[in-house]
Length: 521
Image (tube, rainbow, N blue to C red; front, top):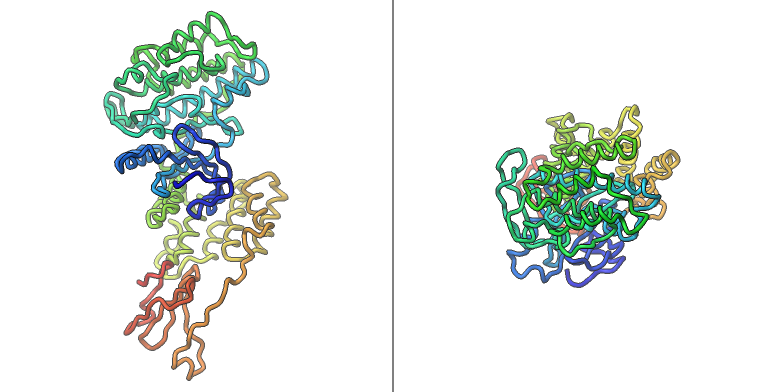
């Protein structure tokens, strides 16, 4: 991008800058509001100097796409897509409001509430941290820059591992670690980026890497949660730092002691030889979960998450990303797949229906169990009908009403939208999905459905002589019109530009449809 942006700037006509998070090692990071989605994203913009050649930029995009491919997991920061803006590939990821683990260690908020509370919090973070890495490993990806700065904490305490591959400018495929679903497969390991204080011995030496390199860096990161900071210059000496800490105890009385079971686990994670470390992060997470139960007397509260791969949530999110990249046909395929996985997935029904409504698509493709064979286009009425629920599931009913309010706003029926949202606000006063559109409607940002303008289409000689009204057919988004101007002549009007787009001669009007982008079929 050409120069830094400031709060209030709109980038690419889609992203409003809300906050600049400073100039990081990779480049600038912005908190932006996606103006179409109405949600906040992290926009990571690398320094243009990282790309000496077009091949460097292509490699960066390919590595960022591996992050996208991880899909949904509660302990992985979701990456939506990479978009090239002003020649720079920018990464758009989930925005996590609580800051990084590095910041929580530095400001001691990780250790608030006394030693017992701090120990429970550290173990909770460590379990989630391990589960996020295990998800990446199961998808054949080694992070290679595991450290507290690349671990984010949401405001509810959820831990999300982030920045898979973003510190690198090259990539390699390393054999010797099993890939997803097969023994002896390959794991994509980016090269060129490491943080010395967290690097494994083999990484520091430039040797072959596998999952156990991440296990080592994870052990260094957990050690830092107990020491309150980095007291070693290089990752390979972290094992000695652990021994010293165990012998001397914490310098700060607010820091909890390392339980013996955790000390033994960390010693294995920090073993100089990779084969001596735990084989998987899943095993590490299981051990930490058991320790949590023993030291707190309570069962670990977070259930093992199920991977979201191929589920409706992930397919719906992927479709939205494709739509934002102007790949509408692929997005429609992804929405169809999401509804095949879950025909009653309300967000997929809404997003798919809205796309088809705007494109003037036929109603048969609205949902797997929708009507087939008709040539009637999808309308707001079809979409509203598909979004209704039977009311037995309170959460689904709330979501249904929110989405139906959005449909009413889309078609300019602000009165009905306002009624739905005001009713929902009384029932759910603190729900951001309700409060956001309600406030937008009150402020006028949602629009009032007023007429933007008018266009008087010229009458044909036959219509004028017989005092007939022009025969006009509109696309579903009302941006294009087709009208008959003779027995075998048809005009296609671009209503957005108020001009005649083309005239079709010797054409039977009933054999012509106009798609939402103005192409005739």
